[in-house]
Length: 117
Image (cartoon, rainbow, N blue to C red; front, side):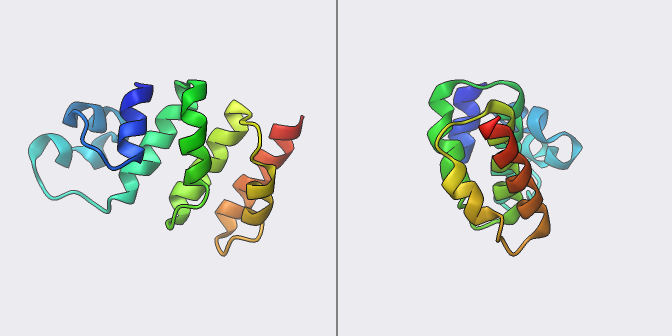
C-alpha cells in the first residue's frame, strides 16, 4: 500500500481499484473510465492512505508534499507529519503557519505541536 501511495504522489499509474479504495465514490471514475477530477486529488488520497499505513521510506515524499501547489495536498501532508511524527519538518511547518489557506495553517500548527511532543 505504501508503494502505491508513493507512486500516486509521484504521478505514476497504479491499479484503478486502489484509487477507488482510497478515494471512495468520488474516485469511481478510476474504475468506470469516466473523466476524473483534478490530479491533485490523487495526491490527497495517497497522503490520506499514509495516515493509516506508513513506512519511514515515505517520509521524504510527505515532506515534499508540504510544498505542493494545491492547498489540500499541503494540508494532508501536514496531517501525516503530525500522525507519524516525521522528524525534520518543523521549519517547513513554520512556513505553512503563514499559508494563504486557513486549513493549511491550522494543520501546520497542530502538526508542529505534535511533532515536538
